[in-house]
Image (cartoon, rainbow, N blue to C red; front, side, top):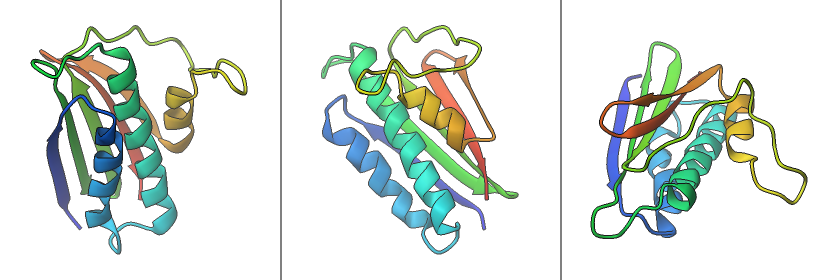
Length: 128
């Protein structure tokens, strides 16, 4: 199975839901629990972009790329924000505090990381 999802998302709260819903195209070709892991990762990373990148409606942009091939579901969320430095291992800020997003991405992914290529991107891979 080789499936590609590419979409641009406006910097607005509904974009995390739209990104999550776009993964419905993978249903039936990816095991359900792996699809749920991908939905969680995409939702958390898009939400981080929306909350922390200080994107304006006029010039802010978030993009989503998801690809399933060769036993891997790979995802990448990019935005026009400044980004952040990666710590050794993400850790949550307490039960009710923030900081759970990348911790959860780390938990469901076999690999994840960041890159800068004109935009700031967080990518992940899940074995399917």
